[in-house]
Image (cartoon, rainbow, N blue to C red; front, side, top):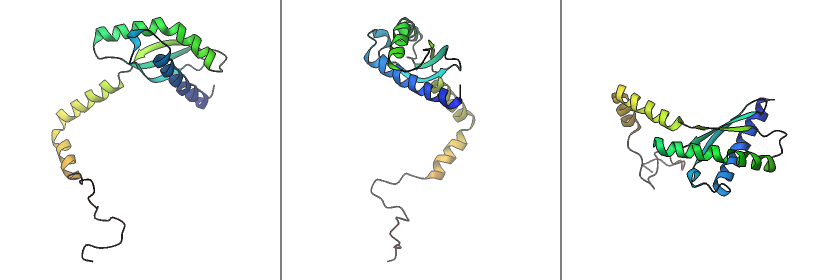
Length: 144
């Protein structure tokens, strides 16, 4: 299957699953879950569904259990709502992208604190709202 079709299916599954979790699934364990991405296998047999879960391990385990319990319902609903020949088996995976990015930023700020301070100083203070920039496009100079 072409990469463009897979990418389109990934996005379509992500949108549909997010909508189903928000409107159709009644399990309180999955309330507030955000679907961040979907990776469908080339043969449409599996779909890895990335979700944002609470940072607390106990709450995260409850959310994942709720998602696994809702998986058959979600798969049936996807089959009814989408026009695909085969609906993949859903495998839910916690999305740790945000935590990884924050960890990398903490490490970089610890290792390179002077570089971060220099970058902030080089940018200077942000202009206040309503202040005109030096070149406001009017063509006039300050002396005129």
